[in-house]
Image (tube, rainbow, N blue to C red; front, side, top):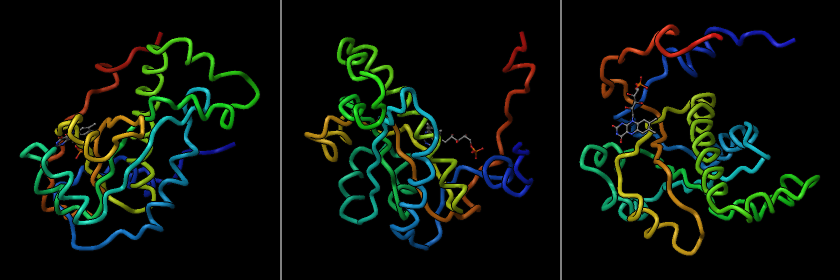
Length: 196
Ligand SMILES: Cc1cc2nc3c(=O)[nH]c(=O)nc-3n(C[C@H](O)[C@H](O)[C@H](O)COP(=O)(O)O)c2cc1C
């Protein structure tokens, strides 16, 4: 039976990991992005639908394309991050269900209800964005998630013709802890949970 992972791993994933606002001038090779994807893809989604899609922006040209969509508070840290990921979801994710869930006609569950399809794509795509944050930390990267940007502008600049929609952004790299604020409080178990 599996045990709780060791304390150093828990620190790296949760307890001492911080959202980063400043970045070291240290590149992230594509091999690291592939290592991170190969972990996050294994985490669960409903009907194994895996609706998230990821655009890894690593070039200066890509950053310049992203710039007009960013809120002012997110501008500097995003332009200086080695990588910015657009966490998106595929609105036609169900086209891949014959491959991903071959033992049932799962595609028809979604083609018969656009609202259910959208809900499933957004729910599971968001989960996969969270998996990306934890997978990044697991492979030694720091992260900074952002919802402060114009989704329509990002979609027009990067996702035109794909059927993908942006959800949120995540900066990736090796953080400079001088850019972090004091840790904010979290809700206690009593405040956030019930055991019934
Ligand atoms: C989905 C999401 C969106 C966020 N959007 C922004 C943002 O637009 N700008 C920003 O500076 N921080 C943003 N944050 C960062 C949070 O404020 C930060 O993760 C939280 O305060 C916890 O900080 P800590 O991880 O250092 O404890 C976002 C975080 C998440 C998960």
